[in-house]
Structures are given as C-alpha cells and as structure tokens.
Image 1 (cartoon, helix red, strand yellow):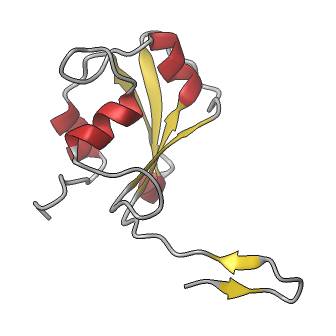
Image 2 (image 1 turned 120 degrees about the vertical axis):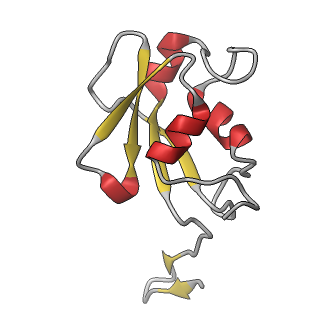
Image 3 (image 1 turned 90 degrees about the horizontal axis):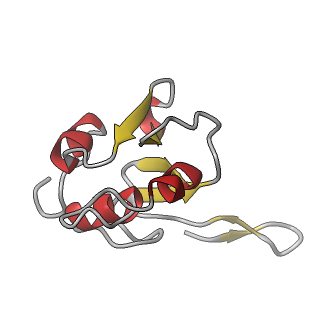
Length: 112
C-alpha cells in the first residue's frame, strides 16, 4: 500500500518479500561468476534462478546485491540474511545452492 506524506513523497511501498538477503556486489565481481549450473553466474542471480524467484519487490524473496560489506574474503561472497543479520555467511565459489537456501531458510517457489 502506498501512502503520501505532507510533501507528496511516498512514505511506504509494499513488497511481497518474506525474506531479504543481501549479497556483496564487490565480492561477486571479484569471483567473476562461480555459481550456477555452468559456474558462470554471480551468486545473487544463480540463487534467484535456483529458487525460481523473480527480481524486484514483487518477488517472494528479495535477493539484493549491495555495495561492499567490508569483509572481502578470498574466493567467497559475503551474504547477509536480513532475518538473522548478526551472523554473516561466506559463500565459496561452487557452493551447493540447496545448502545455502536451507541456511537462509529459503524454499523454492511453489514448495513452501
């Protein structure tokens, strides 16, 4: 639902997200892929495809690439589960996306 503030700006915009997952864009770029069936996709795209999610606020889950999170692990991508933001994950290239989805409490569209 959208509401307008006194100055005409939108205060709120709804989304269909159950979860929000933040993926470090800089880590993903450094790996130059490393995920997906062919190992040539960035983590956010591969996870979205693996879970059959659309992109944007109308998706069931928000998987968003964000600017550098400041961890910069070698050979891995930093991921933050918005629901459990105290524990960040370091996801190595080629990681099992089923295990990652389970660690993030995500299920493919149509299964949950």
